[in-house]
Image 1 (cartoon, helix red, strand yellow):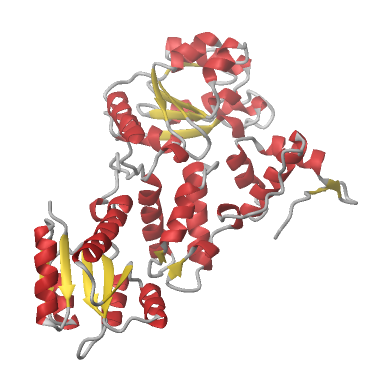
Image 2 (spheres, one colour):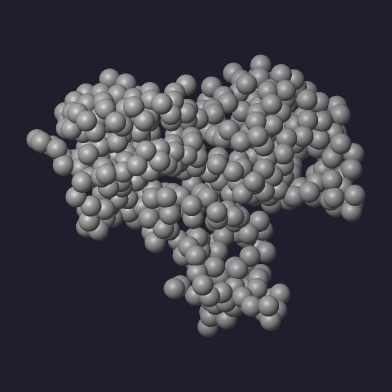
Length: 456
């Protein structure tokens, strides 16, 4: 499909020359003599690129640029002017023009500017973006990269069976979204989907939470209560952080998988359960099984259909699609006009390694929109951790402990001291983070810990 370009200039000769060059280069071209006609053309058809003169009767090219930026996220702009000056160039760029061409310009200069603008559109995939939602419940999986296409194919296959699924991937990659996509694309979609965080339930309570208990089974059991497995009857149970299960509970879960029955705490009578199990982990479960920290027989039972989620740093331009999605949704929630991200900001976001993956990206976008003062977000608006810095506190002479301390400090600063978010980004639990802070920190008079990290 040809890219569609709208050319706006009050000089007929200029319109004719530009149309001839662009048509010869394979573009679809619409020409109009003024801003009013340009606005009508934008409303009537999808435009990929607007090329506009700066000075025209009635309304200026600057006004048209602002109109495009406020109303058409999928359209780029090139400004033409016969009155080139630094202030004019700055104003054009601040208004949202991607390129600034001074008259007279050569055919090559025109085509090069258009090509660069089209390359940016291709990079952002904005003009083709429709999201990639994989379930009736809009699970929110977004991305067109090859690694994500592989994930989608695995989800489709898993959804067509009742086999146990093991979703693996780093923290923040969206493992629960995959589990929901599997459930809501399968024949169990009308039955419950019950998520359980295995790492968030104390070992002593896990069995009663999973399988329920009978009245009088223990002190405080004043009435019988169904567990998560009974609640998920006919549907799916999502066992997140399954690697956190202790070996005794792993043995119980293995029996459930084999016999399709559960014993409520305090009951000697087994109860049949019809539940599909979807498990998830951010650890190498196969390695844990080989080292004896996870039952090998249980590992093979839950790893019937493996789905591995790639980290965000390996997903290429998916990050730009995710940024678009988060900006649109969060701006709506905040009743704001979505801001424009400069090329510099997008390059910085694209090159950042995102240790906290999609969850970290969403948090950063939310913070940027909350703190934004204007209609544009530039590289200096980004968290310090994401911006280029000449000096580094870490040197080749730093000890491993110093490197760890400085990285933890940087992550804590990045999340404004939120330890839960910091632990998720670092890929550790809160207990481990607290222990490391105690190792590197200073004791409060009351016994608390003051982490030594820089708030610059």
